[in-house]
Length: 393
Ligand code: PMP
Image (cartoon, rainbow, N blue to C red; front, top):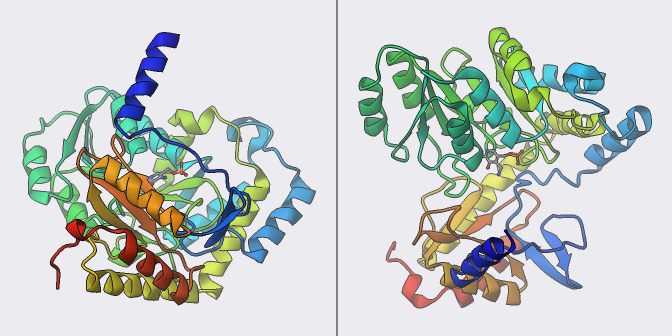
């Protein structure tokens, strides 16, 4: 075992794929300290800048003093507190669904829902670029698992046409693709699912809180109701600034998950105080809608500045603005040069993305200012080599 592990780690190093963690000495946010140095951070998923909001902090502190720290047990044993329950009710209300069910993480929600709903003899079709948790879930489910070309409705339809009549059919997509920042064509997918008697699931990890008039996410943006999009997954650790995840849908779906979703049943409930922080955040979606507007303004500012410099941005209108580099070592070098400029952006490399598709995953949040975005653009201007500039003008 020791030798095998050492060999695998050495290989990772040689391929410029070795992953390292940074130790943040401050709260995450637009400004952080690492090794005693101050940086501007452009790789957090706290899209609305809510993770350090005083109302979330106060709600969590108060709930801690009333409910303690630990969840104590799984939801089905004795870990389901009034705060979890209230959060589920609020999430269902906001998502416009019958009910919602909390999971401790988005990874577990995805594993839980897919493995509870399909198994041997069933069919699952996933976009190639779906999040790792959805791909893992597809494999683990035991259903016949196919990956269709990214956002390619014709490829999906061809595959649906070839399916045998027997077995359930589940189509699963990221609503916003986590490493690319583009969105799935949810309305067209919903129509295809109905045409071929399949059930549609969307993972809205990067959209919930951020899109839609009320912040209800991608389903609100596309105007899709429970019948058109029966399985909606959202996370609470990104736009909501807290932690955890949920599945929203029909009464029948949620009751089935409570009975059969193993990552729901066999794990400790999230701390109730975390649920309290999420509840406080959901209220801010309504009272501080300026955060969504400000984020949109910054995205536009960044994209137009980047276009003027012919930076190789991927086609994305969301807060995830990846800069496509290609080679792993070059992506690492640009990330290191940005760090020298006082800016932290992570390089994303295989196996997270395909070989030759390494990139800098830049994320913008509502906690950034115009000046922060301009500082990022200035640094990119200095560190992105001329050979990578694209003729987009
Ligand atoms: N789905 C997507 C699309 C994600 O990007 C992520 C997180 N990176 C998850 C699910 C997992 O969510 P969590 O971090 O809550 O486990």
